[in-house]
Length: 150
Image (tube, rainbow, N blue to C red; front, side, top):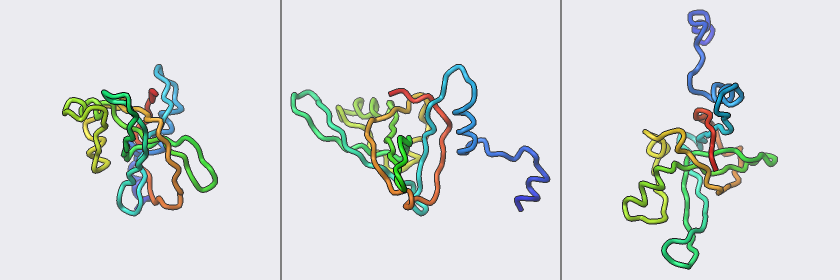
């Protein structure tokens, strides 16, 4: 099937793929892209990473906050493991504050609900990193390359 498709359509590349994201990351552009965000899959389900941070909210006491995300940036590879940073959308943080949940981020229940209708430039790093065993994942979806602000 692949051989026949290649003969029939010389330009049958994917418009959204890890290969395309890597080409976009390394290409010459006015705004230098520095990150390929991605989603990992365990079996058929997207992997939701969970990390913990601390915050202050209308009090002087420091509180814990769980942050969940389906979107990651690779920070390092250590043997068969990867250090991944959890990425979130600024609009989710703002959306949560608008609905009375001050200082909390929105907890998304699926990868699509986290991503749908969001602006690429709105994706930010959390500074929260997790270490994962790469043998646990069977597939990856690369999102378009972006310039990630910290």
